[in-house]
Length: 97
Image (cartoon, rainbow, N blue to C red; front, side, top):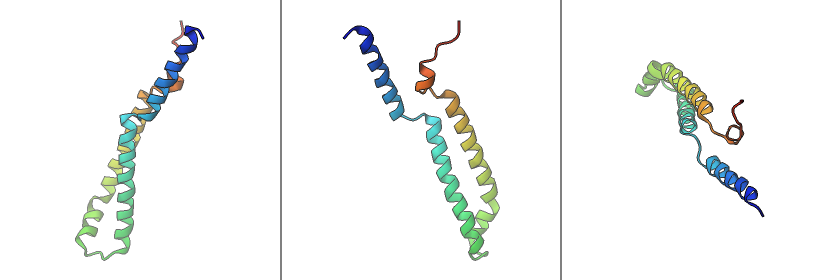
């Protein structure tokens, strides 16, 4: 084996390490998506619940704006995650001369 054979193994190890640790923006997108799902379920439950309940009034008042903020956070986190992603495809590319 020569030295050039050992170098791709190091790249494979770094690729495997990078694939195990997701980008922080993707983590934020997953958390916001979970909150979005919980909010959607709460809005759906409030639609069939007693309209005089305090929780239903709270969801009616803030549900739509909460959903809008969650969608924006998901979109922004996803875009920043893709922009800052250093996946295997981008690592091996060299800038044009």
